[in-house]
Amino acid sequence: MTYRRAAIPALVGGLLLTALLWWAGASTQALRLPGSSGVFGGQGAVDLDRWLAPWSYDPPPGVQLGTEPGPGGGAGGGAGATGARYLSLWSTAMQIRYGALAAFFVAGALFLLRRLPPVRGRTTAALLTLWAWAMVAGTLAVTVSAPWLIAATGHGSYRFLPQLAGVIASGRQLPVLLGLLTAAVTVAVARITAKGAGPLPREAVPARAARLAATAGTGVVALSLVVLSYQPVTAALQSAFPGGGLLSEPGDLLREWLVLGAWAGPAGAPAGDWLLYRCADVVVLVVVWWALRRLPALFTRATVPAMAVGAVCATVLGLLAGQLARMPLDGRVPGRGLLQLAAGLGGGVPAALTCGLLAGAAAAATLRAATGHPRGPGTPAPAPLRPQDPLRPQDPPRPQDPPRPQDPPPAAG
Image 1 (cartoon, rainbow, N blue to C red):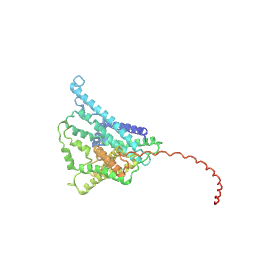
Image 2: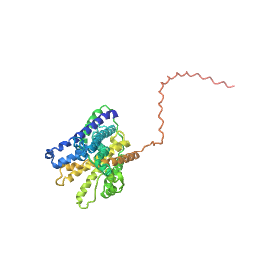
Image 3: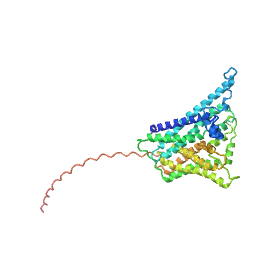
Image 4: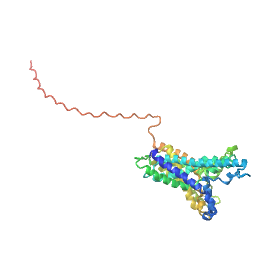
């Protein structure tokens, strides 16, 4: 699929995702009406407000300090001017957030539709990868706009890096739900624009090479999920870099971008429950391995960027599958409703972005080494074959001269 054909569904998907999140963020005022607690319940309304707040233009109460009217009815002098600047920072942060959301999704969708067009045999894979990329785009948009939001609260110089980690971890639930709808619409539009695009070849990948590449990429993800996610290792990572000044305490930020989960030994808990929760981690690795095993054959060209972006989407989908598998286990806790169970969806996307890029690079390198390349980078390309001369019609055979009679042998002397 050419970039011209892929640009239309990518733009449609980016605008739709931005509009849906903006509409959801604008609905926070409805949750604060007196009757909302009767519809959603008290705790349900609070949980929904927490989900929608990162995408709302309405600032929290802490940002509106200093905006009270003065004695003459206007803004209260310097305090009012300070509050106006904070409100301006908040508005700027939200504009950056929504602009970055559209830009990141369009760029990723354009690349994915180019390498993974949603034609027969690839539609499901394209739908899942675009769904995962919608979550990645939401996380990147929140990350880019986080400094302006922190400055708008008036506490930008206090523990900046831990605050940055907290802002990045917010706003992850809505892209999970709205991203699926966006991916479905994007794939539907892409199937229309892909008609008449001509043959879309697949990469011929040997099964053994694909398995080796998937194993190498899954090993990188397992390093974070099994080793770095172990609570003693995570604690050491968080406390290893105390630092000082504005960039002090980077441990929370490192954990957000490096650690995919959290687990400890079965101390104080039944061994059966501990094993059930570990099965959810196994689900993550199985989904990642299966996706990396299939992606090289689905791509039109299994390049390093394509494998890297595909591995990011595979890791996000693996985390989502593990979180869905863990929901029935958490549902056994009394008093937990559907919103409380779904609160963990979409977590770990920043770490999935880091580990997925590394896993994709490892898988691409393994795939290249396993398939083999007879012509290395230093070997000159063989000379092209010259076309043969056209065949000329043969000359007609010439008639043979009649045999001449032999001279008689000379007479003997």
